[in-house]
Structure formats: C-alpha cells, structure tokens
Image (cartoon, rainbow, N blue to C red):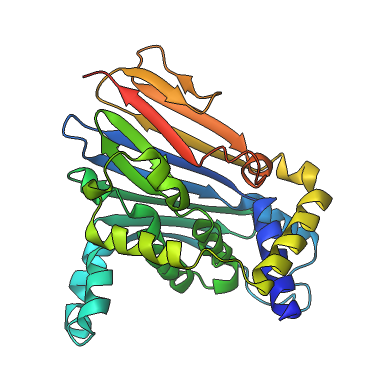
Length: 286
C-alpha cells in the first residue's frame, strides 16, 4: 500500500511542477458555445530529458507526432464494433461525439501540447464536461506512442472534477463537494449529476490510506514549493452579456465587460485552507 501511495504522489508532484493548464469557455446568446482545455506538458518533457529518461536505450527512436482526433468521425468509423458493446459503454462513447483533440509531441524540440475542445448547443452540454474528459484522456494515451508520457494528464484532470451551472444569470464552476452550499436549486442538475453527488456524499469519510496519502502529498508539496509557483492554472470565460460581478478576488474583467480571466499557481490551488476554486462565480446583466 505504501509503495502504491508513493508512486501516486511522485506522479502528481512531477506533473504539477511541469504543467500549465488553460480552461476557456466562449458562450453565445443561447448559452451554448465552445469549451476548450489547453495543456502544455513541454516542461515535463524537458525535465524528463534532464533526468536522463530513455538513456538506457539510446537507439530508441524519439517520439514525434502531430495528430487530430475528431471523436464524431472515430465513432462513425467504428460503429459496427461499438454496436457490440453494452448500452452503458455505448452511452459513454456517445457523449464524446462533440469533442475534438489535438496532440503535438516532439522529443527533439521538447514540445508536448494537448488541446481539447467541445462544442455544446446549450448549457446542459457543459454541466459534466470535466467528467467526460476522463474518456478523452484515455484516447490520448492510446494515440500516444508512449502512453506513460500522455498518462499523467488524465491524473491531472481527475484532480479537478467540477460541475458547471447557470442559474438566475449566474455562471458557476463549483467543486461537487460544496455545490449544495452555492446552488439555490439542485433540481436544475441532470439526474446523472445528482446521482454522482449522492455517491460523493456517501463516501466522504477519509480512510487510513487517504490520510497517509494526504500526509505524503503535503510533505512533497513543501519540498517542491518553488517549482509549484511556476505551474499555473488559467481560466478564461467569454459571455454574450456584460459582467456585473465575479469571485474570487483577483479575477480580471476585460474592457468591454464581457470576458473574465483568472490565473493562479498550482501551489495555491493545492493549499486546502484557501479553496480558491471551490466556487468560481460570475453574475451577468439581465
């Protein structure tokens, strides 16, 4: 058990000191639009190279790829095999039909970037996008010739499960554990989301392994404090109407009043006491 926890902590620390993430959502008048996540893992590749990764096999060909995966096309091309899957598995794949993923990796130049976006017709298509991303990252690992390099990205996203809501001209990006504290009416959520929230509430007790893992993570966070400062999370949201207010403090509203940006180091996000992104809230004009 200790070995497993140690490996997990090492992976997460290594990823977070080496990664910049940007989340961008552009809304139209109907509150549909485009969701986009950009992940720059180039620093991770540079660090791995400096540590001598792959030195044991110098003749191994270096990875170079530049690929685009349109999930609607992928689903259509494999429709016969998908038809043989269970109804549940087919539903999981169907929810990815609006996603597109771009990956660029070049070990010679040290570039490793991922860009994932989803077009959604109305706000319900955005509510659970953070959960849907897990399946997208599975495909990213399959596409990569070196799955272990692509893999940490999925660990990162699993750290950041959030629910998006829009109620009474208020947009929220909320941690599921605190959603009930901020949402006036949970009836606006999809049934699947409500079931997930109930499961979350039923499993809030922290077991012994979780406590040990948290202790190790805190120790590593202290050890790599300076490096965490160089790894950033950036949010950018573009709305069709002007913004009245936004929280938390530090968010910047554009001159035209319709775009809000917020940038924060991972070190701040991992500090339990701050809870900076527990509830990111934007209130719009009527």
